[in-house]
Length: 359
Length: 154
Length: 126
Image (cartoon, rainbow over all chains, first blue to last red; front, side):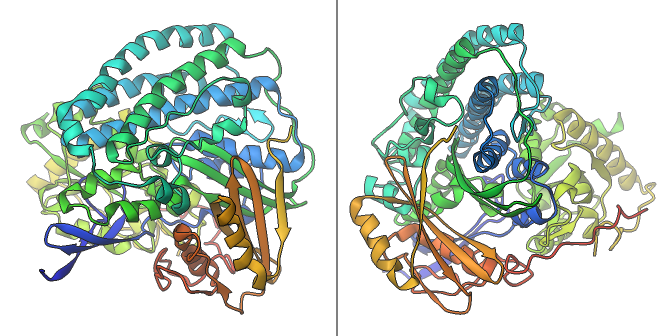
Protein backbone atom coordinates (compact mmCIF):
# COMPACT_ATOMS: atom_id res chain seq x y z
CA UNK A 1 0.00 0.00 0.00
CA UNK A 2 1.46 3.30 -1.02
CA UNK A 3 1.36 6.52 0.90
CA UNK A 4 -1.60 8.84 0.64
CA UNK A 5 -0.97 12.17 -0.95
CA UNK A 6 -3.25 15.16 -1.27
CA UNK A 7 -3.38 16.78 -4.66
CA UNK A 8 -5.01 20.14 -5.18
CA UNK A 9 -7.22 20.45 -8.27
CA UNK A 10 -8.13 23.97 -9.35
CA UNK A 11 -9.14 26.75 -8.94
CA UNK A 12 -7.62 27.73 -12.28
CA UNK A 13 -7.61 24.52 -14.27
CA UNK A 14 -7.58 24.02 -18.03
CA UNK A 15 -10.69 21.81 -18.13
CA UNK A 16 -12.74 24.00 -15.86
CA UNK A 17 -14.19 27.19 -17.21
CA UNK A 18 -14.90 28.15 -13.64
CA UNK A 19 -12.88 27.99 -10.48
CA UNK A 20 -13.69 25.15 -8.12
CA UNK A 21 -11.13 23.70 -5.81
CA UNK A 22 -10.93 20.04 -4.90
CA UNK A 23 -8.52 18.40 -2.51
CA UNK A 24 -8.04 14.94 -3.91
CA UNK A 25 -6.68 12.36 -1.51
CA UNK A 26 -4.78 9.93 -3.72
CA UNK A 27 -3.37 6.47 -3.34
CA UNK A 28 -1.23 6.04 -6.44
CA UNK A 29 -3.58 6.93 -9.29
CA UNK A 30 -6.77 6.24 -7.35
CA UNK A 31 -8.82 8.91 -5.63
CA UNK A 32 -9.72 7.87 -2.09
CA UNK A 33 -11.58 10.97 -1.11
CA UNK A 34 -12.41 14.32 -2.62
CA UNK A 35 -13.10 17.40 -0.57
CA UNK A 36 -14.55 20.34 -2.48
CA UNK A 37 -14.12 23.89 -1.34
CA UNK A 38 -15.72 26.84 -2.99
CA UNK A 39 -15.74 30.57 -2.46
CA UNK A 40 -13.78 31.95 -5.39
CA UNK A 41 -16.85 33.48 -6.99
CA UNK A 42 -18.84 34.19 -3.85
CA UNK A 43 -20.27 37.67 -4.13
CA UNK A 44 -22.94 37.60 -1.46
CA UNK A 45 -25.58 38.79 -3.86
CA UNK A 46 -28.46 37.57 -1.69
CA UNK A 47 -27.73 40.41 0.73
CA UNK A 48 -28.55 42.90 -2.03
CA UNK A 49 -32.27 42.48 -1.29
CA UNK A 50 -31.75 45.14 1.32
CA UNK A 51 -30.48 47.53 -1.36
CA UNK A 52 -32.80 46.80 -4.27
CA UNK A 53 -36.55 46.99 -4.34
CA UNK A 54 -38.27 43.72 -5.11
CA UNK A 55 -39.02 44.48 -8.81
CA UNK A 56 -35.39 45.50 -9.36
CA UNK A 57 -33.98 42.44 -7.69
CA UNK A 58 -34.93 40.43 -10.79
CA UNK A 59 -31.77 41.77 -12.43
CA UNK A 60 -29.65 40.48 -9.58
CA UNK A 61 -31.48 37.15 -9.55
CA UNK A 62 -30.83 36.75 -13.28
CA UNK A 63 -27.16 37.42 -12.81
CA UNK A 64 -26.76 34.63 -10.31
CA UNK A 65 -25.71 32.66 -13.32
CA UNK A 66 -25.30 33.65 -16.91
CA UNK A 67 -26.08 30.22 -18.32
CA UNK A 68 -29.52 29.68 -16.85
CA UNK A 69 -30.22 33.35 -16.26
CA UNK A 70 -33.74 33.29 -17.64
CA UNK A 71 -34.85 30.50 -15.34
CA UNK A 72 -33.35 32.28 -12.33
CA UNK A 73 -35.29 35.42 -13.15
CA UNK A 74 -38.46 33.47 -13.78
CA UNK A 75 -38.24 31.46 -10.57
CA UNK A 76 -37.70 34.60 -8.53
CA UNK A 77 -40.63 36.37 -10.19
CA UNK A 78 -42.77 33.30 -9.68
CA UNK A 79 -41.95 33.36 -5.97
CA UNK A 80 -42.89 37.01 -5.56
CA UNK A 81 -46.07 36.49 -7.61
CA UNK A 82 -47.09 33.61 -5.37
CA UNK A 83 -46.55 35.72 -2.26
CA UNK A 84 -48.55 38.62 -3.73
CA UNK A 85 -51.23 36.37 -5.24
CA UNK A 86 -50.74 37.83 -8.68
CA UNK A 87 -52.68 36.23 -11.50
CA UNK A 88 -50.11 36.17 -14.31
CA UNK A 89 -51.69 36.24 -17.79
CA UNK A 90 -51.70 32.92 -19.60
CA UNK A 91 -49.71 34.22 -22.57
CA UNK A 92 -46.90 35.35 -20.29
CA UNK A 93 -46.74 31.88 -18.75
CA UNK A 94 -46.45 30.29 -22.18
CA UNK A 95 -43.76 32.76 -23.22
CA UNK A 96 -41.84 31.92 -20.05
CA UNK A 97 -42.10 28.24 -20.91
CA UNK A 98 -40.82 28.82 -24.43
CA UNK A 99 -37.87 30.89 -23.25
CA UNK A 100 -37.11 28.39 -20.49
CA UNK A 101 -36.89 25.60 -23.01
CA UNK A 102 -34.67 27.61 -25.32
CA UNK A 103 -32.45 28.31 -22.29
CA UNK A 104 -32.35 24.60 -21.57
CA UNK A 105 -31.34 23.86 -25.16
CA UNK A 106 -28.55 26.41 -25.00
CA UNK A 107 -27.35 25.20 -21.62
CA UNK A 108 -27.36 21.51 -22.59
CA UNK A 109 -25.56 22.18 -25.86
CA UNK A 110 -22.99 24.22 -24.00
CA UNK A 111 -22.50 21.38 -21.56
CA UNK A 112 -22.30 18.76 -24.31
CA UNK A 113 -19.57 20.82 -25.94
CA UNK A 114 -17.58 21.15 -22.73
CA UNK A 115 -18.05 17.46 -22.04
CA UNK A 116 -16.79 16.55 -25.50
CA UNK A 117 -13.81 18.79 -24.83
CA UNK A 118 -13.16 17.04 -21.50
CA UNK A 119 -13.00 13.64 -23.19
CA UNK A 120 -10.72 15.17 -25.82
CA UNK A 121 -13.17 15.32 -28.71
CA UNK A 122 -12.48 18.81 -30.04
CA UNK A 123 -14.51 18.40 -33.20
CA UNK A 124 -17.67 17.57 -31.29
CA UNK A 125 -17.13 20.59 -29.05
CA UNK A 126 -17.17 22.77 -32.15
CA UNK A 127 -20.24 21.03 -33.57
CA UNK A 128 -22.22 21.46 -30.34
CA UNK A 129 -21.28 25.09 -29.98
CA UNK A 130 -22.09 25.79 -33.57
CA UNK A 131 -25.58 24.33 -33.07
CA UNK A 132 -25.93 26.39 -29.92
CA UNK A 133 -25.56 29.64 -31.84
CA UNK A 134 -28.92 28.93 -33.47
CA UNK A 135 -30.57 28.98 -30.03
CA UNK A 136 -28.75 32.14 -29.02
CA UNK A 137 -29.90 33.87 -32.19
CA UNK A 138 -33.51 33.07 -31.34
CA UNK A 139 -33.05 34.31 -27.78
CA UNK A 140 -31.41 37.48 -29.01
CA UNK A 141 -34.12 38.12 -31.55
CA UNK A 142 -36.97 37.63 -29.11
CA UNK A 143 -35.55 39.09 -25.91
CA UNK A 144 -32.67 41.30 -26.95
CA UNK A 145 -29.98 39.44 -25.04
CA UNK A 146 -27.90 36.45 -25.95
CA UNK A 147 -27.13 35.08 -22.52
CA UNK A 148 -28.69 37.53 -20.07
CA UNK A 149 -32.19 38.01 -21.36
CA UNK A 150 -33.83 40.28 -18.81
CA UNK A 151 -37.25 39.56 -20.24
CA UNK A 152 -38.99 38.41 -17.08
CA UNK A 153 -40.58 40.78 -14.62
CA UNK A 154 -42.78 40.46 -11.58
CA UNK A 155 -46.28 40.04 -13.00
CA UNK A 156 -45.41 38.76 -16.45
CA UNK A 157 -42.87 39.29 -19.17
CA UNK A 158 -41.38 42.39 -20.69
CA UNK A 159 -42.05 41.76 -24.34
CA UNK A 160 -44.19 39.63 -26.56
CA UNK A 161 -43.18 37.35 -29.40
CA UNK A 162 -45.22 38.29 -32.47
CA UNK A 163 -47.19 35.42 -34.00
CA UNK A 164 -45.31 35.39 -37.30
CA UNK A 165 -41.97 35.25 -35.49
CA UNK A 166 -43.27 32.39 -33.42
CA UNK A 167 -44.36 30.53 -36.56
CA UNK A 168 -40.96 30.99 -38.10
CA UNK A 169 -39.24 29.86 -34.88
CA UNK A 170 -41.22 26.63 -34.96
CA UNK A 171 -40.45 26.09 -38.62
CA UNK A 172 -36.73 26.64 -38.02
CA UNK A 173 -36.77 23.97 -35.35
CA UNK A 174 -37.03 21.24 -38.02
CA UNK A 175 -33.61 21.93 -39.47
CA UNK A 176 -32.18 22.42 -36.01
CA UNK A 177 -33.58 19.08 -34.89
CA UNK A 178 -31.89 17.31 -37.80
CA UNK A 179 -28.58 18.92 -36.86
CA UNK A 180 -29.06 17.80 -33.27
CA UNK A 181 -29.78 14.26 -34.35
CA UNK A 182 -26.35 14.06 -35.94
CA UNK A 183 -24.70 15.37 -32.80
CA UNK A 184 -26.81 13.10 -30.58
CA UNK A 185 -25.81 10.12 -32.65
CA UNK A 186 -22.14 10.80 -31.97
CA UNK A 187 -22.67 11.35 -28.25
CA UNK A 188 -24.69 8.18 -27.81
CA UNK A 189 -22.85 5.80 -30.14
CA UNK A 190 -19.28 6.95 -30.57
CA UNK A 191 -16.83 4.36 -29.37
CA UNK A 192 -14.34 6.76 -27.80
CA UNK A 193 -17.05 8.58 -25.85
CA UNK A 194 -18.51 5.32 -24.61
CA UNK A 195 -15.05 4.14 -23.66
CA UNK A 196 -14.34 7.26 -21.64
CA UNK A 197 -17.72 7.51 -19.91
CA UNK A 198 -19.35 4.13 -19.41
CA UNK A 199 -18.89 2.80 -15.88
CA UNK A 200 -17.07 5.99 -14.87
CA UNK A 201 -18.27 8.00 -11.88
CA UNK A 202 -20.91 5.61 -10.62
CA UNK A 203 -23.75 6.96 -8.50
CA UNK A 204 -26.29 4.49 -7.16
CA UNK A 205 -29.99 5.25 -7.16
CA UNK A 206 -30.16 5.45 -3.35
CA UNK A 207 -27.14 7.71 -3.10
CA UNK A 208 -28.58 9.95 -5.79
CA UNK A 209 -31.91 10.27 -4.00
CA UNK A 210 -30.72 10.72 -0.43
CA UNK A 211 -27.60 12.75 -1.10
CA UNK A 212 -29.70 15.29 -2.89
CA UNK A 213 -28.80 14.77 -6.55
CA UNK A 214 -31.13 16.67 -8.86
CA UNK A 215 -31.72 17.13 -12.53
CA UNK A 216 -29.78 15.02 -15.06
CA UNK A 217 -27.44 13.87 -12.28
CA UNK A 218 -30.41 12.20 -10.55
CA UNK A 219 -32.17 11.14 -13.73
CA UNK A 220 -29.00 9.44 -14.94
CA UNK A 221 -29.21 7.23 -11.85
CA UNK A 222 -32.84 6.30 -12.35
CA UNK A 223 -34.41 8.93 -10.07
CA UNK A 224 -37.16 10.37 -12.23
CA UNK A 225 -37.65 13.72 -10.53
CA UNK A 226 -38.36 16.61 -12.84
CA UNK A 227 -39.82 19.74 -11.31
CA UNK A 228 -41.57 20.60 -14.55
CA UNK A 229 -44.04 17.93 -13.51
CA UNK A 230 -45.37 20.26 -10.78
CA UNK A 231 -46.88 22.27 -13.62
CA UNK A 232 -45.45 25.72 -12.96
CA UNK A 233 -45.60 28.28 -15.81
CA UNK A 234 -47.44 26.47 -18.63
CA UNK A 235 -45.90 23.04 -18.09
CA UNK A 236 -49.14 21.77 -16.55
CA UNK A 237 -50.81 22.09 -19.94
CA UNK A 238 -48.07 20.40 -21.95
CA UNK A 239 -47.34 16.71 -22.23
CA UNK A 240 -43.91 15.24 -21.66
CA UNK A 241 -42.13 12.48 -19.81
CA UNK A 242 -38.81 13.12 -18.09
CA UNK A 243 -35.84 11.37 -19.68
CA UNK A 244 -34.52 8.75 -17.27
CA UNK A 245 -31.49 6.48 -17.57
CA UNK A 246 -30.55 3.83 -15.07
CA UNK A 247 -26.82 3.39 -15.67
CA UNK A 248 -25.71 5.85 -12.97
CA UNK A 249 -22.47 6.60 -14.83
CA UNK A 250 -21.20 9.57 -16.84
CA UNK A 251 -22.61 8.04 -20.01
CA UNK A 252 -26.13 7.94 -18.56
CA UNK A 253 -25.96 11.52 -17.40
CA UNK A 254 -24.82 12.52 -20.87
CA UNK A 255 -27.60 10.45 -22.49
CA UNK A 256 -30.24 12.14 -20.29
CA UNK A 257 -29.13 15.55 -21.49
CA UNK A 258 -29.06 14.45 -25.11
CA UNK A 259 -32.63 13.15 -24.83
CA UNK A 260 -33.77 16.31 -23.08
CA UNK A 261 -32.74 18.34 -26.11
CA UNK A 262 -35.49 16.65 -28.06
CA UNK A 263 -37.97 16.95 -25.17
CA UNK A 264 -37.31 20.69 -25.15
CA UNK A 265 -37.91 21.00 -28.89
CA UNK A 266 -41.15 19.09 -28.49
CA UNK A 267 -42.25 21.31 -25.59
CA UNK A 268 -41.54 24.46 -27.62
CA UNK A 269 -43.67 23.11 -30.46
CA UNK A 270 -46.52 22.23 -28.11
CA UNK A 271 -46.35 25.60 -26.37
CA UNK A 272 -46.27 27.49 -29.67
CA UNK A 273 -49.35 25.58 -30.83
CA UNK A 274 -51.33 26.26 -27.67
CA UNK A 275 -50.28 29.80 -26.78
CA UNK A 276 -53.34 32.03 -26.31
CA UNK A 277 -53.67 35.66 -27.32
CA UNK A 278 -53.84 38.27 -24.62
CA UNK A 279 -52.00 40.48 -22.17
CA UNK A 280 -48.46 39.71 -21.19
CA UNK A 281 -48.27 41.31 -17.76
CA UNK A 282 -50.20 42.56 -14.78
CA UNK A 283 -49.02 45.44 -12.66
CA UNK A 284 -48.15 44.34 -9.15
CA UNK A 285 -49.91 46.38 -6.45
CA UNK A 286 -48.43 46.86 -3.00
CA UNK A 287 -45.52 44.99 -1.56
CA UNK A 288 -44.96 41.30 -0.93
CA UNK A 289 -45.84 40.14 2.55
CA UNK A 290 -45.31 36.47 3.18
CA UNK A 291 -43.01 33.72 2.04
CA UNK A 292 -42.77 31.12 -0.66
CA UNK A 293 -40.37 28.47 -1.85
CA UNK A 294 -40.47 28.90 -5.59
CA UNK A 295 -39.24 25.80 -7.38
CA UNK A 296 -38.38 25.24 -11.01
CA UNK A 297 -36.42 22.83 -13.14
CA UNK A 298 -33.18 24.35 -14.30
CA UNK A 299 -30.98 22.59 -16.87
CA UNK A 300 -28.92 21.36 -13.92
CA UNK A 301 -31.76 20.35 -11.64
CA UNK A 302 -34.15 21.73 -9.11
CA UNK A 303 -33.78 25.40 -8.37
CA UNK A 304 -35.32 26.91 -5.24
CA UNK A 305 -35.79 30.62 -4.77
CA UNK A 306 -37.01 31.33 -1.27
CA UNK A 307 -38.51 34.78 -0.94
CA UNK A 308 -39.74 36.35 2.24
CA UNK A 309 -41.23 39.80 2.41
CA UNK A 310 -42.57 41.86 5.29
CA UNK A 311 -44.81 44.30 3.45
CA UNK A 312 -42.04 46.74 2.57
CA UNK A 313 -40.43 47.37 -0.81
CA UNK A 314 -37.40 45.40 0.25
CA UNK A 315 -37.55 41.67 0.80
CA UNK A 316 -36.34 40.33 4.11
CA UNK A 317 -34.58 37.41 2.52
CA UNK A 318 -33.92 35.90 -0.82
CA UNK A 319 -32.29 32.53 -0.68
CA UNK A 320 -31.18 30.85 -3.84
CA UNK A 321 -30.59 27.13 -3.59
CA UNK A 322 -29.03 26.15 -6.83
CA UNK A 323 -28.79 22.65 -8.28
CA UNK A 324 -24.99 22.66 -8.31
CA UNK A 325 -24.90 23.10 -4.55
CA UNK A 326 -27.14 20.11 -4.02
CA UNK A 327 -25.19 18.10 -6.59
CA UNK A 328 -21.89 18.58 -4.73
CA UNK A 329 -22.41 15.77 -2.16
CA UNK A 330 -23.22 13.26 -4.94
CA UNK A 331 -20.06 14.44 -6.74
CA UNK A 332 -18.03 13.58 -3.64
CA UNK A 333 -19.60 10.09 -3.72
CA UNK A 334 -18.81 9.68 -7.43
CA UNK A 335 -15.19 10.73 -7.10
CA UNK A 336 -14.35 8.28 -4.32
CA UNK A 337 -12.58 5.35 -5.96
CA UNK A 338 -12.14 6.82 -9.42
CA UNK A 339 -8.88 7.26 -11.28
CA UNK A 340 -7.14 10.61 -11.30
CA UNK A 341 -7.36 10.93 -15.07
CA UNK A 342 -11.15 10.58 -14.91
CA UNK A 343 -11.63 13.42 -12.43
CA UNK A 344 -12.25 16.14 -15.05
CA UNK A 345 -14.89 14.06 -16.83
CA UNK A 346 -16.67 13.20 -13.59
CA UNK A 347 -16.61 16.77 -12.30
CA UNK A 348 -18.08 17.94 -15.58
CA UNK A 349 -20.72 15.23 -15.60
CA UNK A 350 -22.76 16.99 -12.90
CA UNK A 351 -22.65 20.13 -15.05
CA UNK A 352 -21.16 22.28 -12.32
CA UNK A 353 -22.14 25.90 -12.37
CA UNK A 354 -20.00 27.44 -9.70
CA UNK A 355 -21.33 30.94 -10.24
CA UNK A 356 -24.70 29.57 -9.20
CA UNK A 357 -23.45 27.51 -6.31
CA UNK A 358 -21.60 30.32 -4.57
CA UNK A 359 -23.74 33.25 -5.51
CA UNK B 1 -1.65 44.53 -39.25
CA UNK B 2 1.71 43.84 -37.62
CA UNK B 3 0.09 41.99 -34.77
CA UNK B 4 -0.87 39.20 -37.09
CA UNK B 5 2.77 38.25 -37.34
CA UNK B 6 2.42 36.72 -33.91
CA UNK B 7 0.00 34.13 -32.54
CA UNK B 8 -1.09 35.52 -29.22
CA UNK B 9 -2.29 33.02 -26.67
CA UNK B 10 -4.88 34.00 -24.17
CA UNK B 11 -5.38 32.91 -20.59
CA UNK B 12 -8.95 33.18 -19.40
CA UNK B 13 -9.76 33.48 -15.73
CA UNK B 14 -13.21 33.77 -14.18
CA UNK B 15 -12.80 36.12 -11.22
CA UNK B 16 -16.34 36.29 -9.85
CA UNK B 17 -18.36 36.37 -12.98
CA UNK B 18 -21.90 35.06 -13.33
CA UNK B 19 -20.71 32.91 -16.27
CA UNK B 20 -22.45 35.10 -18.79
CA UNK B 21 -19.21 36.68 -20.01
CA UNK B 22 -17.32 33.40 -19.64
CA UNK B 23 -19.50 31.55 -22.04
CA UNK B 24 -19.25 34.45 -24.46
CA UNK B 25 -15.46 34.29 -24.23
CA UNK B 26 -15.71 30.58 -25.00
CA UNK B 27 -18.20 31.30 -27.78
CA UNK B 28 -15.45 33.34 -29.44
CA UNK B 29 -13.56 30.07 -29.89
CA UNK B 30 -16.53 28.37 -31.54
CA UNK B 31 -16.87 28.15 -35.34
CA UNK B 32 -19.13 31.17 -35.75
CA UNK B 33 -16.71 33.70 -34.25
CA UNK B 34 -13.53 31.67 -34.53
CA UNK B 35 -10.74 33.74 -33.01
CA UNK B 36 -8.29 31.10 -34.09
CA UNK B 37 -8.19 32.88 -37.43
CA UNK B 38 -6.07 35.48 -35.61
CA UNK B 39 -3.87 32.69 -34.31
CA UNK B 40 -5.44 33.07 -30.90
CA UNK B 41 -5.52 29.98 -28.74
CA UNK B 42 -6.98 29.67 -25.26
CA UNK B 43 -4.32 28.19 -23.02
CA UNK B 44 -4.53 27.05 -19.43
CA UNK B 45 -0.95 27.84 -18.62
CA UNK B 46 -0.11 31.41 -17.56
CA UNK B 47 3.52 31.01 -18.68
CA UNK B 48 2.34 30.45 -22.24
CA UNK B 49 -0.06 33.34 -22.35
CA UNK B 50 0.34 36.85 -23.76
CA UNK B 51 -3.15 38.14 -23.09
CA UNK B 52 -4.94 37.77 -19.76
CA UNK B 53 -8.68 37.86 -20.23
CA UNK B 54 -10.58 38.30 -16.99
CA UNK B 55 -14.32 38.16 -16.54
CA UNK B 56 -16.07 39.21 -13.36
CA UNK B 57 -15.01 41.47 -10.53
CA UNK B 58 -12.37 40.84 -7.91
CA UNK B 59 -13.60 39.34 -4.68
CA UNK B 60 -11.84 38.76 -1.41
CA UNK B 61 -11.05 35.17 -2.29
CA UNK B 62 -9.51 35.53 -5.70
CA UNK B 63 -7.45 38.73 -5.45
CA UNK B 64 -4.34 36.67 -4.70
CA UNK B 65 -5.14 34.21 -7.50
CA UNK B 66 -5.46 37.01 -10.06
CA UNK B 67 -2.28 38.68 -8.83
CA UNK B 68 -0.48 35.34 -9.05
CA UNK B 69 -1.65 34.60 -12.56
CA UNK B 70 -0.61 38.06 -13.70
CA UNK B 71 2.82 37.79 -12.11
CA UNK B 72 3.43 34.39 -13.65
CA UNK B 73 2.85 35.65 -17.18
CA UNK B 74 5.96 36.58 -19.14
CA UNK B 75 6.47 40.16 -20.36
CA UNK B 76 5.18 41.77 -22.50
CA UNK B 77 1.61 41.06 -21.47
CA UNK B 78 -1.74 42.77 -21.73
CA UNK B 79 -4.87 42.50 -19.63
CA UNK B 80 -8.38 42.64 -21.03
CA UNK B 81 -11.26 43.16 -18.57
CA UNK B 82 -14.35 41.64 -20.16
CA UNK B 83 -17.77 42.83 -19.06
CA UNK B 84 -19.00 45.48 -16.70
CA UNK B 85 -18.20 43.45 -13.56
CA UNK B 86 -14.54 43.20 -14.55
CA UNK B 87 -14.50 46.90 -15.40
CA UNK B 88 -16.11 48.28 -12.26
CA UNK B 89 -17.83 45.61 -10.22
CA UNK B 90 -21.11 46.04 -12.09
CA UNK B 91 -24.37 45.20 -10.37
CA UNK B 92 -22.43 43.48 -7.63
CA UNK B 93 -20.27 46.41 -6.65
CA UNK B 94 -22.13 46.90 -3.39
CA UNK B 95 -21.76 43.28 -2.30
CA UNK B 96 -19.64 42.88 0.79
CA UNK B 97 -17.40 40.26 -0.79
CA UNK B 98 -16.69 42.16 -4.00
CA UNK B 99 -13.66 44.42 -4.08
CA UNK B 100 -14.35 46.08 -7.41
CA UNK B 101 -13.05 45.96 -10.96
CA UNK B 102 -9.90 44.16 -12.05
CA UNK B 103 -8.01 47.43 -12.11
CA UNK B 104 -7.87 47.64 -8.34
CA UNK B 105 -5.46 44.67 -8.38
CA UNK B 106 -3.59 44.73 -11.67
CA UNK B 107 -3.24 47.26 -14.51
CA UNK B 108 -5.87 46.81 -17.22
CA UNK B 109 -5.17 47.72 -20.85
CA UNK B 110 -8.56 47.23 -22.48
CA UNK B 111 -12.05 47.44 -21.00
CA UNK B 112 -14.79 45.58 -22.87
CA UNK B 113 -18.27 46.86 -22.02
CA UNK B 114 -21.47 44.85 -21.81
CA UNK B 115 -23.52 42.62 -19.57
CA UNK B 116 -22.86 40.14 -20.88
CA UNK B 117 -20.19 41.36 -23.29
CA UNK B 118 -20.99 40.28 -26.84
CA UNK B 119 -18.52 38.05 -28.69
CA UNK B 120 -18.02 40.78 -31.29
CA UNK B 121 -16.94 43.28 -28.67
CA UNK B 122 -14.73 40.70 -26.96
CA UNK B 123 -12.94 40.06 -30.25
CA UNK B 124 -12.65 43.80 -30.79
CA UNK B 125 -11.16 44.16 -27.34
CA UNK B 126 -8.64 41.40 -27.87
CA UNK B 127 -7.57 42.75 -31.27
CA UNK B 128 -7.12 46.15 -29.65
CA UNK B 129 -5.07 44.51 -26.90
CA UNK B 130 -2.85 42.98 -29.56
CA UNK B 131 -1.82 46.35 -30.88
CA UNK B 132 -0.99 47.42 -27.32
CA UNK B 133 1.00 44.22 -26.98
CA UNK B 134 2.88 45.14 -30.14
CA UNK B 135 3.63 48.60 -28.74
CA UNK B 136 4.79 47.10 -25.48
CA UNK B 137 7.10 44.81 -27.35
CA UNK B 138 8.60 47.73 -29.23
CA UNK B 139 8.78 49.72 -26.04
CA UNK B 140 6.64 52.56 -27.37
CA UNK B 141 3.69 51.96 -25.11
CA UNK B 142 3.11 54.53 -22.41
CA UNK B 143 1.89 52.43 -19.52
CA UNK B 144 -0.68 53.68 -17.10
CA UNK B 145 -0.11 53.26 -13.40
CA UNK B 146 -2.62 50.87 -11.86
CA UNK B 147 -5.58 52.74 -10.52
CA UNK B 148 -4.88 51.40 -7.07
CA UNK B 149 -7.84 52.12 -4.85
CA UNK B 150 -9.59 54.20 -7.46
CA UNK B 151 -11.48 51.45 -9.26
CA UNK B 152 -12.54 49.75 -6.06
CA UNK B 153 -14.83 51.37 -3.61
CA UNK B 154 -12.53 50.86 -0.71
CA UNK C 1 -53.01 30.60 -9.33
CA UNK C 2 -51.23 28.66 -6.63
CA UNK C 3 -48.63 26.32 -8.01
CA UNK C 4 -48.35 24.06 -5.00
CA UNK C 5 -49.44 23.97 -1.40
CA UNK C 6 -46.54 24.47 0.97
CA UNK C 7 -46.95 23.32 4.49
CA UNK C 8 -44.69 24.81 7.15
CA UNK C 9 -44.58 23.42 10.69
CA UNK C 10 -42.75 25.26 13.43
CA UNK C 11 -41.16 22.76 15.77
CA UNK C 12 -39.00 22.74 18.88
CA UNK C 13 -35.31 22.28 18.29
CA UNK C 14 -35.27 19.18 20.51
CA UNK C 15 -37.84 17.42 18.34
CA UNK C 16 -36.05 18.17 15.08
CA UNK C 17 -33.93 15.05 14.76
CA UNK C 18 -36.87 12.72 15.48
CA UNK C 19 -39.07 14.43 12.91
CA UNK C 20 -36.36 14.43 10.24
CA UNK C 21 -35.82 10.70 10.85
CA UNK C 22 -39.54 10.23 10.36
CA UNK C 23 -39.40 12.00 6.99
CA UNK C 24 -36.50 9.87 5.87
CA UNK C 25 -38.42 6.70 6.82
CA UNK C 26 -41.35 7.82 4.72
CA UNK C 27 -39.00 8.29 1.77
CA UNK C 28 -38.83 12.08 1.62
CA UNK C 29 -35.78 13.69 0.08
CA UNK C 30 -34.09 16.74 1.53
CA UNK C 31 -34.71 19.76 -0.67
CA UNK C 32 -32.76 22.36 1.20
CA UNK C 33 -31.90 23.95 4.51
CA UNK C 34 -31.91 27.68 4.79
CA UNK C 35 -31.54 30.30 7.41
CA UNK C 36 -33.25 33.67 7.62
CA UNK C 37 -32.47 36.37 10.10
CA UNK C 38 -35.65 37.89 11.47
CA UNK C 39 -34.91 40.57 14.04
CA UNK C 40 -32.51 39.00 16.49
CA UNK C 41 -33.68 35.48 15.84
CA UNK C 42 -32.84 33.03 13.11
CA UNK C 43 -35.44 30.96 11.32
CA UNK C 44 -34.05 27.75 9.97
CA UNK C 45 -36.13 25.92 7.38
CA UNK C 46 -35.68 22.27 6.54
CA UNK C 47 -37.57 21.43 3.37
CA UNK C 48 -38.53 17.95 2.19
CA UNK C 49 -40.20 16.58 -0.86
CA UNK C 50 -41.89 13.31 -1.73
CA UNK C 51 -43.56 12.94 -5.12
CA UNK C 52 -43.74 16.74 -5.50
CA UNK C 53 -45.35 17.19 -2.06
CA UNK C 54 -43.45 19.96 -0.34
CA UNK C 55 -43.11 19.94 3.44
CA UNK C 56 -41.21 22.39 5.53
CA UNK C 57 -40.00 22.16 9.13
CA UNK C 58 -38.93 25.31 10.88
CA UNK C 59 -36.99 25.91 14.04
CA UNK C 60 -36.40 29.34 15.51
CA UNK C 61 -33.11 29.80 17.31
CA UNK C 62 -31.28 32.67 18.95
CA UNK C 63 -27.98 31.94 17.25
CA UNK C 64 -26.12 31.29 20.48
CA UNK C 65 -27.22 27.74 21.16
CA UNK C 66 -25.77 24.96 19.07
CA UNK C 67 -28.11 23.09 16.79
CA UNK C 68 -27.84 19.41 15.94
CA UNK C 69 -26.72 18.31 12.49
CA UNK C 70 -29.03 16.21 10.36
CA UNK C 71 -26.15 15.02 8.18
CA UNK C 72 -26.29 11.70 9.99
CA UNK C 73 -29.72 11.18 8.46
CA UNK C 74 -29.33 12.91 5.11
CA UNK C 75 -25.70 12.54 4.12
CA UNK C 76 -25.73 15.50 1.75
CA UNK C 77 -26.95 17.96 4.36
CA UNK C 78 -23.39 19.01 5.15
CA UNK C 79 -23.22 21.59 2.37
CA UNK C 80 -26.20 23.49 3.71
CA UNK C 81 -25.08 23.21 7.33
CA UNK C 82 -21.56 24.38 6.54
CA UNK C 83 -22.98 27.21 4.50
CA UNK C 84 -25.25 28.22 7.36
CA UNK C 85 -22.29 28.16 9.70
CA UNK C 86 -20.10 30.22 7.39
CA UNK C 87 -22.67 32.84 6.45
CA UNK C 88 -24.74 33.19 9.60
CA UNK C 89 -22.46 31.86 12.31
CA UNK C 90 -24.95 29.23 13.44
CA UNK C 91 -23.02 26.51 15.22
CA UNK C 92 -23.98 23.08 14.01
CA UNK C 93 -22.65 20.09 15.93
CA UNK C 94 -22.04 16.61 14.61
CA UNK C 95 -21.60 17.31 10.88
CA UNK C 96 -20.19 14.38 8.94
CA UNK C 97 -17.96 16.66 6.88
CA UNK C 98 -17.04 19.75 8.84
CA UNK C 99 -15.19 22.38 6.85
CA UNK C 100 -14.58 24.36 10.01
CA UNK C 101 -15.76 27.59 8.42
CA UNK C 102 -13.96 27.11 5.14
CA UNK C 103 -16.64 25.98 2.70
CA UNK C 104 -17.38 29.50 1.64
CA UNK C 105 -14.39 31.58 2.53
CA UNK C 106 -15.30 35.20 3.04
CA UNK C 107 -13.15 38.05 4.22
CA UNK C 108 -15.75 39.06 6.77
CA UNK C 109 -16.90 36.56 9.34
CA UNK C 110 -20.57 35.53 9.19
CA UNK C 111 -21.47 38.21 6.65
CA UNK C 112 -25.17 37.40 6.45
CA UNK C 113 -25.73 37.85 10.18
CA UNK C 114 -25.15 41.60 9.83
CA UNK C 115 -25.06 42.46 6.14
CA UNK C 116 -22.88 45.40 5.20
CA UNK C 117 -22.46 47.07 1.85
CA UNK C 118 -19.73 48.90 0.12
CA UNK C 119 -19.85 52.64 -0.40
CA UNK C 120 -22.79 54.00 -2.31
CA UNK C 121 -21.07 57.04 -3.72
CA UNK C 122 -21.06 57.61 -7.46
CA UNK C 123 -18.48 55.96 -9.69
CA UNK C 124 -15.02 57.31 -8.89
CA UNK C 125 -13.75 59.89 -11.35
CA UNK C 126 -10.58 59.15 -13.19
